[in-house]
Image (cartoon, rainbow, N blue to C red; front, side, top):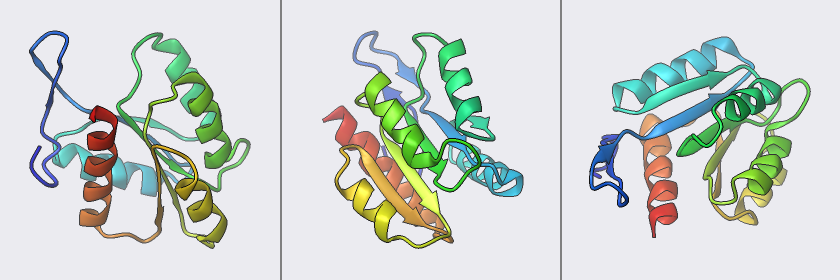
Length: 143
């Protein structure tokens, strides 16, 4: 996949290409909508959730269909993004997650560094930084 394109990836099981599905979880509607639109313009298929509980319901409702990657805010009412990540690790161990936050990066950055398939981005972040991080996590998952 070329840098920042969001191009479909090969599905080794069928030989067909499939789109990359990303779940965006953020309780700030404008931020979530902006991320969704940005990623859609780069060819990703996006689903959105306003909080961790909604994300969990969405994942449970879809049964075996899981996103290829999750982008989650950390500070949300109810379950935090870190708690959501822990739940996802138990349910979908190989699922890459990007945690984002506008608050202090120390604890989340340390958590991400110590959790396989997890990255942390401090808000605000550049579009290219987000796209490169997505590609790196997806490439590591495929490897």
